[in-house]
Length: 249
Image (cartoon, rainbow, N blue to C red; front, side):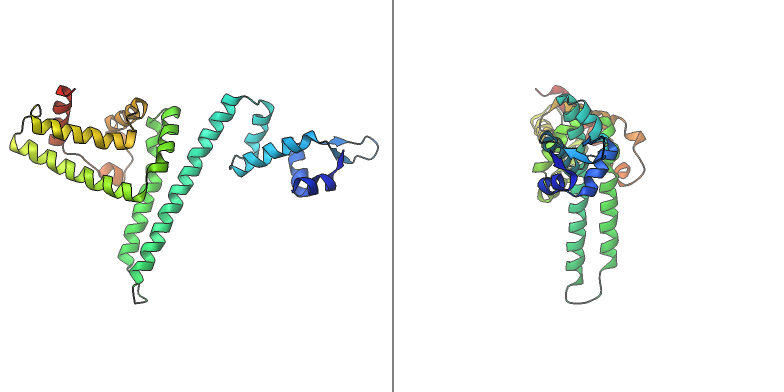
């Protein structure tokens, strides 16, 4: 048995934290009936360790209690998956802020006068990235988890390359449509293959992610206002690719 001060020192936490966990019902010590002193047991160290780990992961204390009371792996898995998405979102915002600071530093050059137009573009880009949460509504929980896992591989260099490749492909398809190319022909099938390859760069070939992506594009009329809604693939391009893919293996 440990008195509260001794337990706090052994566990590496503050007495104030222990009192707080006690009030929330997360870690209830034994109480001496005569003196009212709190007393902790060896088994309380394991309980405290669970609380500290979940708190470190960013899970609110109000959600930790139910998790500890019903230690079902499925319930914990769902919470951890959601928390992983929250952490990825924070990481993406931090990455965008770091890029903004680096661009700001470079814009100064050898002078002390910043390029405020550049700053404005950077801010708009970050705001656009922060507004992308609306896309999550189109994906299942399982697909969201898979997308988060793939973000580990998605570097700024890959994003730049993907943007370039998509821009070039859309231009090539538009040119082929203007020339009257047959989507069923060799040239049309090569364009369709390039289209599938770029899509696979995002979906990883996973049908569940592809299903969410299809649902998002089918609902384009209801996208929120902003840069995302302003992005448009010309109808001649989508028609050409649709006809090419309908004949491809």
